[in-house]
Length: 198
Image (cartoon, rainbow, N blue to C red; front, top):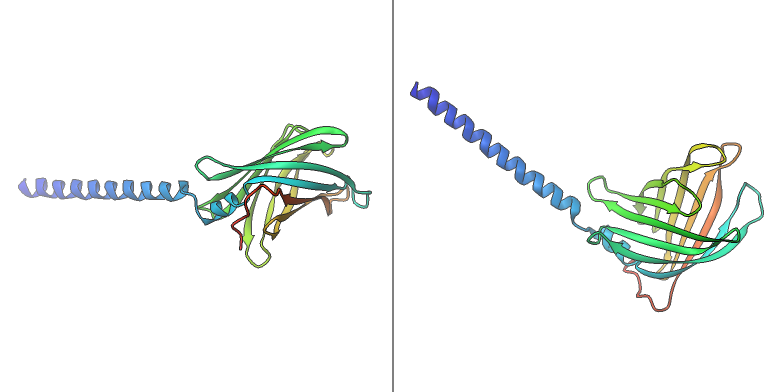
C-alpha cells in the first residue's frame, strides 16, 4: 500500500513538473511571437510621409494611366505592424487605401493586407525578404469584381535606395496570363528621417 502511495506521489510530481515546463515553454513561445524582431525594425525605418507616382494598366497593352498620391507610414500594435494610409486620386475620383504590413516571427514571412474605398474586399498576401535584391515578393489573392471571383495577385516591393521604393503589382489578364497592372514609385519626403536599410 505504501509503495502504491509513493508511486502515485512520484507520478503526480512528474506530471506537475511537466505541466510547469509546458507552461513556461508556452509563455516563452508567445513572448517570442509578440516581440518585435529585426524585420519589424526594418519596417519602422520606412515610417513617415512618402509621395507616390502611380502608373496603372487596366488590361495588357492598354495605355498607362498616371496619377499621384501620398502615404503616411506609422508603426502600430507595439511596433509589430506598419500601417500605411494612402490618399490621392484615381480615375478622377478621390482615393484612399490602408495597408497593414507585419512580420510573422513564427512562420518567418511578411504578411500584408490592403483595403480601399474602391472595393469591399480585403487583399491578403505573404512574402519573404530577399537580401540580394533588397525586395519582398508577395503572393496572395484579391477579389476581381469583373471576374466575380477571387484571383491570384503578386507584388514585388523593392528598396531602391534610402529614399526610394518601388512597388510592382501583377494580376491575371483576360486570357488568364499574368500581366503588370500597376507600378508605384515612392519617394521619401524631405522632412522624414532616413530608413535603417543598409
